[in-house]
Amino acid sequence: MRAVQVTEFGPPSGLTVAEVPDPEPGPGEVVVEVAAAGVNFPDILVVEGTYQNLPERPFSPGKEAAGTVVAVGEGVERLTVGQRVLTLVEYGAFTERLLVPEELVVEIPDAISFEEAAAFGLVYSTAHFGLVRRARLRAGEWVLVTGAGGGVGSAGVQLAKALGARVIALARDEERAELARAQGADVALISDVTTLRDDLLRVTDGHGVDVTLEMVGGDVFSQIVRATAWEGRVVIVGFAAGTQNPIKPGHLLVKNIAVLGLQSSDYRDRTPALMRSTMEEMLQLYVEGRLTIPVDAVFPLSKTGDALQAVKDGGIKGKLVIVPERS
Ligand SMILES: NC(=O)c1ccc[n+]([C@@H]2O[C@H](COP(=O)([O-])OP(=O)(O)OC[C@H]3O[C@@H](n4cnc5c(N)ncnc54)[C@H](OP(=O)(O)O)[C@@H]3O)[C@@H](O)[C@H]2O)c1
Image 1 (cartoon, protein in one colour):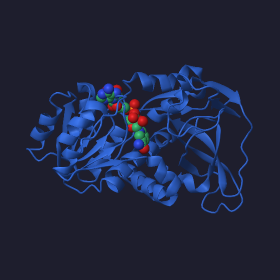
Image 2 (cartoon, rainbow, N blue to C red; image 1 turned 60 degrees about the vertical axis):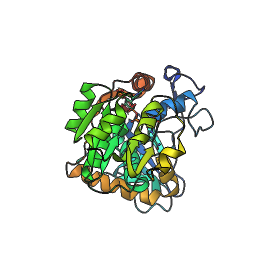
Image 3 (cartoon, protein in one colour; image 1 turned 90 degrees about the vertical axis):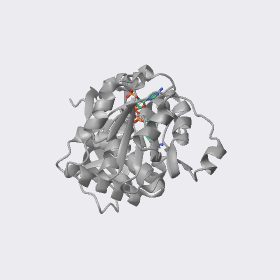
């Protein structure tokens, strides 16, 4: 079978596609024939060698895939050959067939296409664990989602709305602000760090933001801490702007603010059953029409490097998906 390979860390243009042995399932494992794999910002960090978890090279990148179960190993009881599934993995999804532990596989409803399912898992599980598990979001609270035009951001806006929050989306241009409104944001602001704190206090009538899903970092993060409400929670999800600003403990102390870290893959690895039930809950919201997953473009496996570069360059409206070419 064919799989994308990282042989040396570097720019996405250095990715190659190689012939590798077909996987055989061991006890508790299944093989998924990949119909589509989602592209995520962390894939770029993995390929460039700057991500926190890096496997031995050569390896295939890619953190999520959807497809059909084609083989099951000894002791696998929950899954059978022919089932449509999605799976979240640390790496390896940019391939034709993916070997994965049964516990990381979730059955998907017929209503969701493989392309959408492949783009669904990582962004929605990240948004859910950030809002629900870390921030303990309550209905009626003000939620700010930064990087709202991106994958996790767009999932965060929709999920926060579905959970009954009042949602503020922070975007970089009017087109993305409009997209956020269409996805349910009550307010969409264009990012300007010099006025951000005042804008957030104004749109919340002086209350401040209760919960932030923070994807951008740098000065944006610092201004958000200052616009956070009493007993507010700021969940650090990423640093898309490329810098991490220090936290001033005094800003936290005066309003009983909590700044929380999030590494959603930890829930996949440490609590796979919780990850599965969380995914099932969100797939149900998808079936009810309360969540969407806009797929912006589909790339063949041989063009995975181009897809990652496009995400790095910015300006994607929704998610990119890789589809293996079948002969
Ligand atoms: N902690 C976790 O478990 C976890 C899981 C998944 C992702 N992440 C992280 O979360 C972040 C977002 O991931 P994603 O998959 O949603 O990425 P994405 O789809 O590429 O979206 C990134 C977003 O950040 C915005 N952005 C980029 N540079 C910016 C800047 N200098 N100032 C303001 N906004 C900027 C982009 O704006 P435009 O739309 O205008 O381009 C876009 O909305 C990344 O840092 C990623 O590593 C963390």
